[in-house]
Length: 166
Image 1: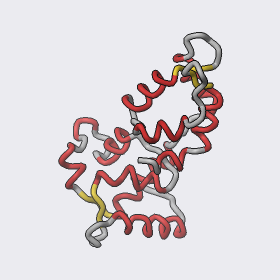
Image 2: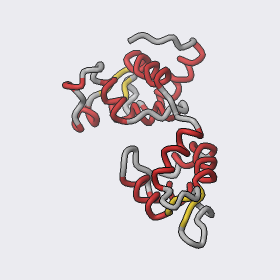
Image 3: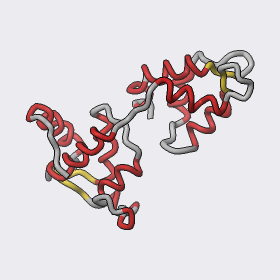
């Protein structure tokens, strides 16, 4: 994998990389790769990063032990970050509306708050309860429903603040 980052971008990445380098040896643990990518506005799935760390070999994905103990240098990380940056598709507003319509049982543009909490805190890239509470603050109606379009607008505008509530 190669990358096409500018020198300015590489300097910015180097500064952030050094913050994650806990030993000062120019290396970060595999398990920091996702968080470091998120510092630059990317939101890769952990499974995608694991696959990149394995060089695309699904048979050789890093184990939990590998994630905690194996390290890589900035030079090794840059091609991974490039792959993340070029593959990053955050989805459109319409994509999110379409996805949440599955939970709109009454067809009125709302989703049950408890059901949405369950889905977002227990499936896929899970939110914490604190993140969910922050994201939905003031949105729940008297019947326990959340307006889908309002939720998506807030989710898309508050992405950085919600991630920091971990």
